[in-house]
Length: 177
Image 1 (cartoon, rainbow, N blue to C red):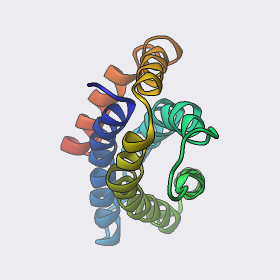
Image 2: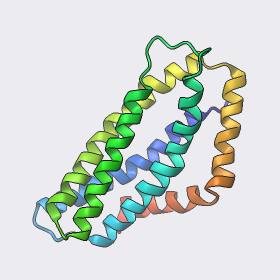
Image 3: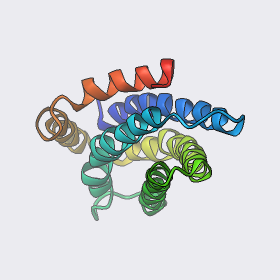
């Protein structure tokens, strides 16, 4: 059965492609190369619009809300930590934006490195801890309802976002910018 968690895990694969590209670009800056502003502008666009809006909408507005309902019994509640990490990610993106605006390579690297490390750990926790827990406790009815909501997000709220940003993730991962 297709579930929202399977969709989210698949989306994580695309996000990780951009994380890998960010790490490569940061490493280039550390080795003395100039900042590639075009790369970082595109990466920030991907992060803000695909990872944060498109992907996090499904987590924060659908899955996490369902998991917080009284009738869903989880032996622990990692969602507050996941939400906190989403905020941390946004802060790292702000660093990259500020670094680009002020032409500050150190701030760009700090934001890129912080975001990359955070996301690798965050995605591991969601894919291997939170999502399996969710699949264990959610009813089939809840799963179907969330799947429909996730499809509505993709088809209506962010129509065309998936295709556009999946291409961008490939471009960033292969070529830098």
